[in-house]
Image 1 (tube, rainbow, N blue to C red):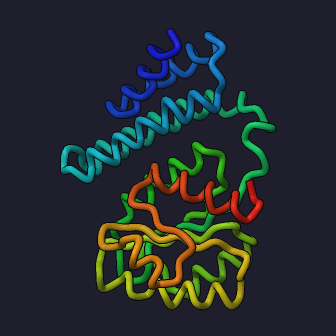
Image 2 (cartoon, one colour):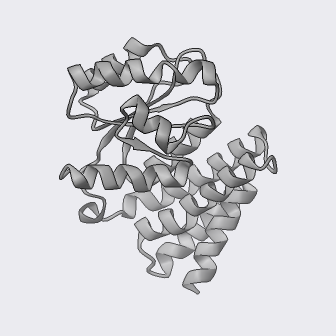
Length: 215
């Protein structure tokens, strides 16, 4: 029954069926499934599949928005039942698409996945000036600053942001991602971490925080 419910959550997110998502979320609680597990193994897994389908050109923006709506509806049911000791202290993440770039689907998926994993996300949106990243990190006392870009003409701003953050907020972890990025480029830019997709972003963020004693 457990696998059936989790699979139902996943499938409902992918299909963008809000009503079914809510039903499966309620069934998960009734069946005694841990709320965090339902979110990660049901909802977040669904959004991970949505991300993959988008990358392959099998899903488009309107469908992704429907999937996001379905996921949030399920999370509204599940979040009140999260065990605080399981989630831990919420870590703040500043996210944004760098200057000159308006492609924010990838960033939005990362936001959804991170919120599902219990992070507190400050979303700066797209076409974000360098100084806005730094200002937000300092104002919020962010644990992580995530930058994304889909255009090669925009990703060149990342090293500038990272350098300034290293000077003004050295304790903040810097992460980059996006189509033209790679592990090698991230290292060359001076970033602490690189994630190729939304699912990887959660894993990398947790690993980096763990190394610094943050989780």
